[in-house]
Image 1 (spheres, rainbow, N blue to C red):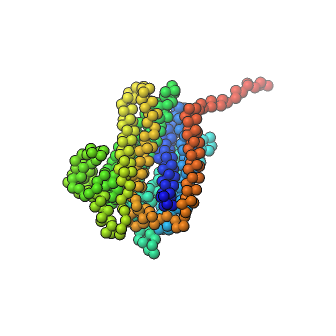
Image 2: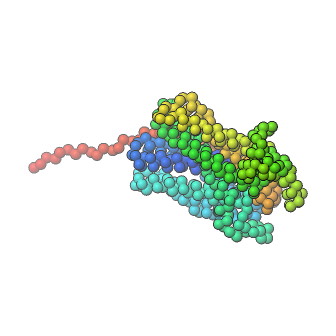
Length: 446
């Protein structure tokens, strides 16, 4: 193992760890804002208690996401300086918009929400949480637009060995980004929905019936998000057919160009012509295979292995689908079981608790498919990963930083889990009784 391999491991570990918090922040923020809106509209106390309860869980997760995200950015200068030099002029604009506009908006209004409970008018205070939520989604958009550019670079030219942006609008409206953004955000709602379902299931098992409402809300949110993920996933697959045929071939285990290509459910189990239909809306379309693409890329870019790790890409795709569908299917089942105000069966509440890891594993598998499937390129067709690493960085230096990051992340993970478990076990806090106006003694009249 050399410094390049270890640097890739380090970026992969820190990115996956950071991304455990991002989708939960995006989806849970909207859920908390919805609960506070319900309290604002109805004035019912239990909505306020639930808002503060899930708001605490949201803030714990948000803080961890910020800390881990900062560490991730350091690596661009530490291990990937050649990559940073190449993409800096392109990435500068979307990442500046993310930091100066979206994250600033998110953090500012979140601070107002935290400290403004008794200081701001109810309507203004409600607006602060919605503004923070909008900021988090804008932040996701700009980062995903930058990531999409790496897979399908547009709106640029290469000058003196560096990519120079020529069209910011083209970068922000990249077709890959327009498919990826709603797909990832909808998947984030599934992650948040799975989290709320698990928490609600646990509290219902403890006899806290106030969590039936959040459970029903999370069931609806997860089911709708599942439909959006399916639709945008289909669009993403068609874009892979046009823009990233190697990733599509690796994900399907297709080695040679095939007309009427089958969809491989599992090795040895296939559905005839389905892959061609899903990819091009034509059951007789030709789908390219990894070996034939490899030969074409060698002619275009010279000798080298342009195939990703096919086993990881193939199985990541199936883990993403199976675990994601399992979570959505569980939510649809829950909508049926709890229809017409029926009680939540205890066995179903336990199943929700056990299913908590499924959406997280699904979204991690999705990112492995997305990022490993792009290899050996950091920027498709322009910059190889082997050419992106910092010159002169040693194996010992990367190993030291990886060890330190892993230890720190391990401590943070324990702290996160302990804080969340304590908060969930404690449940919503009782609100203080409204202060009564002092009773005035009747004065004697002279």
